[in-house]
Length: 170
Image (tube, rainbow, N blue to C red):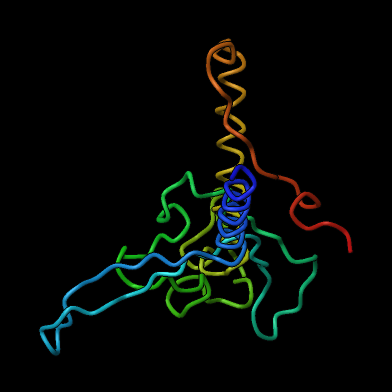
């Protein structure tokens, strides 16, 4: 009897591990505008590692970034997917109208900040969003350490902020 129970637990754990490794689908229903019937919409949330690299013909100067999507689930989706309406499928950052420039503009910065044109270059968008967020978390962590809040509070994890930390030598 005990052996059967252990096997059920093992199978359950294995199923959970497979779901997290291969990806989970969340399902939501909503009205179908055409037929007036319920329509099933599926939102896929990628799990595991997503490889971030330039699209198309862009020459890659550093190794691709291995982005651990599941490590970022504690944050709101819109922190990264800023144009997402919360209802439709999330599109790539290099989708037309977002960060779709494949070459850096001539003057991407003004007063140490990216211009409206500069931020459309996908590389600058990723660097501002990812590295900027990681630096903000590092600063918050340092502030907590200095105020001795570390005695009672779990410190937030920080992400990489250096070139080689994200782009390891191949």
